[in-house]
Length: 331
Image 1 (cartoon, one colour):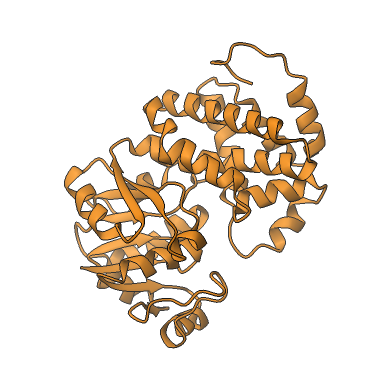
Image 2: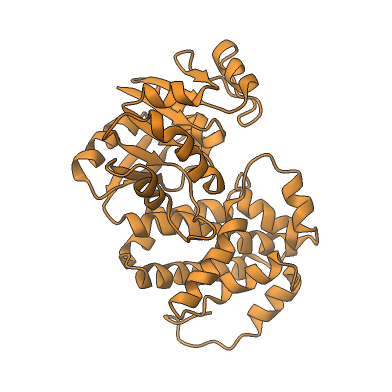
């Protein structure tokens, strides 16, 4: 199987490194220097410092070359670049091949999930998402993990499951694509809230409450958008939420933690190499909450912090003083 991965960030490179052990794999990067480093030194020091990549993994900075050869196309760029890269590649993509998203975000302006963008730009191609509690550095180091292939096509799901299953990485399938993608995108917003709790030093009890009530918000919105509630109790909901909220490797938690320490959002983002998807996802989540008449108090509070309307400390004071209703309701 010829597999092409578009995007040589930490997760795209990690997925390519896993897949290349059994399949002919090429990873595309817009940076010729990174392509040369992967090909010659078998490293990607910008995004995965300290790791040696398999010698079988090849890289290119030619998007057409990567797309033309693919029998499975994997898109590993951030959500804000997703449509643009697909548009550039679409003329070169062979017909009918599966296209898999690695991005965990929602498109600003359209509110679309990544598989919906695939269906728009590449109609007729089976669209899937690979999502779950998958911290790139741990998986590349060979630590046990589990992930989900989300697609409505069971035949494609089984084929992709075989491609991604490697070593201690266990791959499940799930037909609730909407729920799986929403869980992966919206948990980043809650991770910013959890990071703020860490930065403020409010304590583990408070952080646990925020994570739990955040999961309730994800589930409420997901069900309103046609997802199954059970999906949010699984790997793409609770599992991904816990990993992103608790891990020091989490970009979204890092953003929240720095905000909790009183730093400005622009300063935090300026020093980051990789994208914190939750920053762009938060206003989309608020808009979806408005559309479905949901309160989503945590998402709305994080949006106020990100826009500079309130501080992280003000946010937690407000949440503490909110009246408690039933546990099945909002915060």
